[in-house]
Amino acid sequence: MKDEQRPLPPLTQAEGEFIDRYLAVIDSLARVNPTRAEHTYAALRAAQTLVREAEGLRDALTTMHSRGETEVFSSTLLRAIRELDGARRVQRLAIPEEGR
Image (tube, one colour):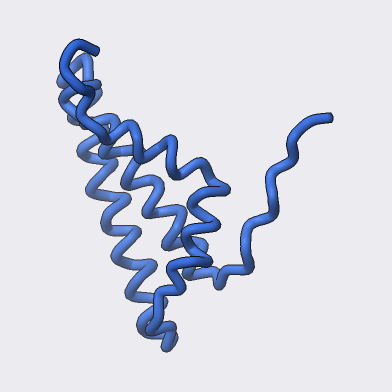
């Protein structure tokens, strides 16, 4: 029997955009990680994408704030991040230990 993903917790559209942009920032930053990057051009492209994704993250948070969504429900957002493989994605930001 194949493992099925649990459904994402209910999120507002802005919260969904916030999570999507947050994870996109992490993915872009991981591609810029100097301990993992292989070519300057690829790192440059990732850095350019990082700027766009960070702007999108800012815009999602601005939308949330302007709609009166003043609280960040960390436990709900954490569940969504975990379901979207956030833990693995964040690990790509880490600096490898010596000897690896």
